[in-house]
Length: 277
Image (tube, rainbow, N blue to C red; front, side, top):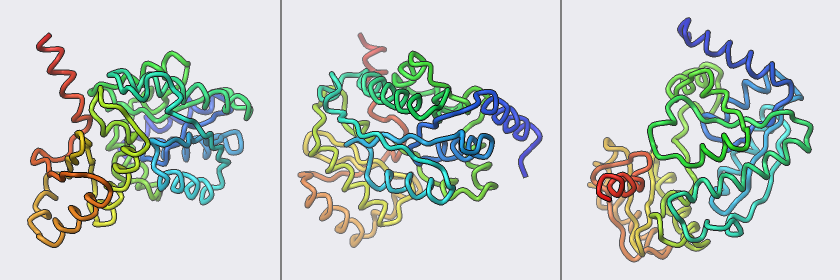
């Protein structure tokens, strides 16, 4: 059962959503947006709609998961196809790429939300999403998109706990991120690179890894998994399976990061530059 503090946050969230009247939820099928969409629909019924961006940087399996979730919950889903390679700066991958991309994507989602009759577009940033470099949050603020989970102070662990209590299949889903975040700033982003990364991460998922990233450095893959799963690579059969699959996808070299999975590991270069101008 949730604590009284958590119950209070949940009630505040419901009150905030009720005040909005009609809402479109930017839905990625991740833990946060799924929880937000479910609560929004519970509060507003048919005055809640989900909007999902279909892009080359968003895995097809997640688009399918978004559709399946909305069908199971009886929620109307609007899908907007967006060519991220038409967004100025996306291909060049500057440090503010996420801002440029998110500004373009959320502008389209906002337009779709308004056309659907929704008064407000909301997204799933939570109270923990302030510790890393996240230029995309600036785009969200500039467009007037609301972040109700952040507004009421709900953390990731609290959202998972509430999702589990509600019976949502996403409660223990691994953290998601745009595939472009696997490519170091300054390295060009191409459809081929995104497809290679997507295929590599799908292989790790099929092998049962819980949380993972495949970072692309030139023609080399740097695999990040949770520290307690590093030991699995001591199995020669598993190593061979991963290596063969990634070579087939086009990676020349396949390496394992001994530091393990951590959010935004490619942002370390920005912190280093800031400290050593």
